[in-house]
Image 1: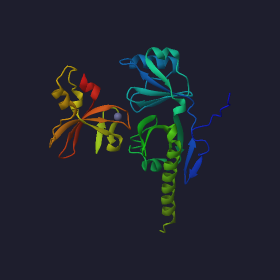
Image 2: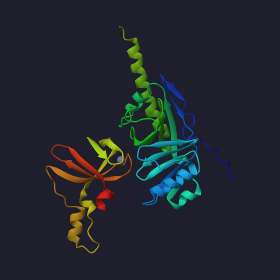
Image 3: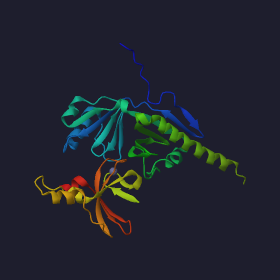
Length: 189
Length: 87
Ligand SMILES: [Zn+2]
């Protein structure tokens, strides 16, 4: 039988540093969609809490307990990140392993919000998107999930097939922001 | 144009797809005459003023919404989850 070599979604496309912003590939571990059965969101949340120490997140929220996280990921949908869901959850929710379906990018540095502002139509300023936020939105033309663990770091999940397009769009935005910074620095007086 | 998604808050038009008048919420019974199905599928008014439409938050939370919109002013005056409206 053929020996298949596993590659990461971003292969050798990252890391990239342009100006003061760095793009790297994240390691979310596993990505499990948790979709509570109709009317079972509370029961699913209770089961999540006892098994993983995490609630079913309200819209827009990201929670962390140790190395496990849970992010709101759409209507009646959350992504459990970094672990396998406890089997007790299966009584309250559909559980789908999407680990290989997503590319996970991490963007950090002082100008991160300026870079994302060129591609993302939601407000990522601290007042509108505080630490522990999760946003379903667009990155350019791509559907994405943006996580904000805090500071000037944002994590971006795009469909795996979009990985190189996401890197392309982000590096173009990083270049444009860095060019403006450079021009500003060189303008006399 | 911003649409106030009940799940996500006010979001840019780019994240949505318009799916047409809320007529789609009112499906005829399977036994309804062909005229009723013709109306349901094809025939629409073209109002100048307030109207209610289905919008899909396709690049956001994925919810189907019923959006109240004024076709003259483009003002969006409300949005609800379609499943809440259907109840
Ligand atoms: Zn939404």
